[in-house]
Length: 456
Image (cartoon, rainbow, N blue to C red; front, side, top):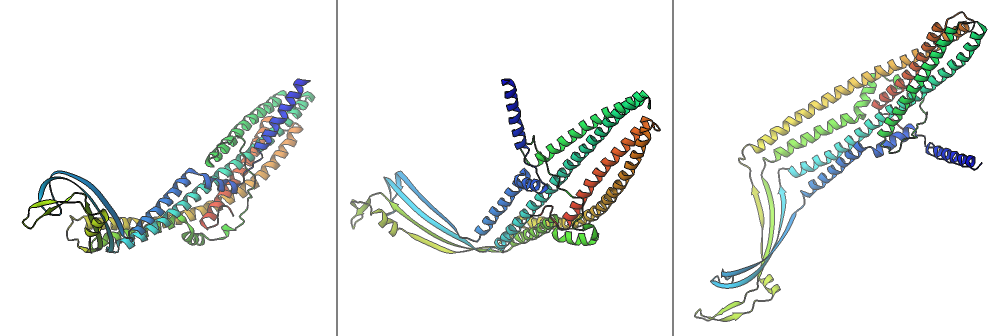
């Protein structure tokens, strides 16, 4: 009795834990949102955006003055020149010196201005790159999500077919006993049931692998009980196929991130040319310097004849610092005349990169046009394939029902009847395949038209 109570308790606990772990059913929107927040590649791209912001901070710093301070303290032992008299004598002295320098670019061929503009464009490009990464991850998640749904429904089809065949097997046993059909037909049905069991195992494995793939795409650490909601409708709710390919292409040229990235990189290349050309121009810098020193040695005293008559203690530290201070300021003009073709090579190199960026924009535009027209054709083809598959499964269902009636009265052998069942099962699987293929193709077409994959 106690053993039964203990087993019942364990069963209740196990059921409770399993129910709790399976309580989370992921929708497509939740999957996409979670993937965008946790995907490793997206996190790396976010760091690139932060790096671009740091580079912009450095570009702003080019406009600010540079300020540097210095200080030193030294000991001089032996024959040294007295800084007060200029005479050489054996002595031990200490000196402290300090100074500060300020410099500022007054004119630098507009290089600082163009560097800042390039830094701003780099931030824009990094943000576009982050958007592109998020869009790619969203599409991959959607594709993996639909694959899970396909495998779930395919498993249901196989299970339903197994149930039908098991009932048919039981029915065939009765017909064999009644002498209506030969025993060989019963063996054929038995083999069909065994084949159905194999199909179910294969469908279960495919479902498990697809769930695992989606969970790993989401960076989930625990995915044993991971499952998704069946919330996808086969419907072109935005009537995207009502648009023309040219209309979708025109909208895509305004919305697609990869084209924005190419255009921004072109602007960055233009700024690089301007920065390189700026090195041909003269630069003008302003500067200001301050310095002072303090000596700790005793000062010698001389009479009118130049004879040493004694020493005097050094003046206080701050008095010396004030009396010995000095300042300098001015401007410095630098004119580039010849530098081993360095500037010329930098300009030519930046021009070559500019031409590459122009070609990249053209290529991206051509790729976008081809992708849009291909996606439109794929979506229409997927719709036609789905509609044809639906008609086919209706016809196969009618043929199967007719075959079953003939088989039940002994007018059809088991081989032909099994063929009818197989064709029906295959047609149902084809409906599922074309259904989710159509959904994904519509999502891609909407994506090019600027319709987000998920709605906030």
